[in-house]
Length: 78
Image (cartoon, rainbow, N blue to C red; front, top):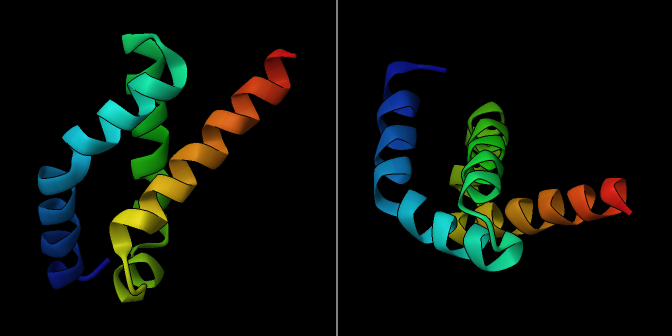
C-alpha cells in the first residue's frame, strides 16, 4: 500500500468500524465473535483496498464481505 492508501484506509476504519461492529453483533449475537468477524473483514478490505475504495459504495462492499464471512462461519459450524 502506498502512503495515501494507508491514510484512506485508516480514515475508513475510524469512520466505519463501529457500524461494522454493530452489524456483526446483530449477525452473531456475541461480542467476541463479532469482534473477530470485523477484524477478518478489515483484513480482507485492507488486502483489496484499491478495489474497495474505487467501488461506488465502499461501506456496502465492506458489509457484503462481513455477511459473507458470517455465512462461512455458520456453514463451518453446521
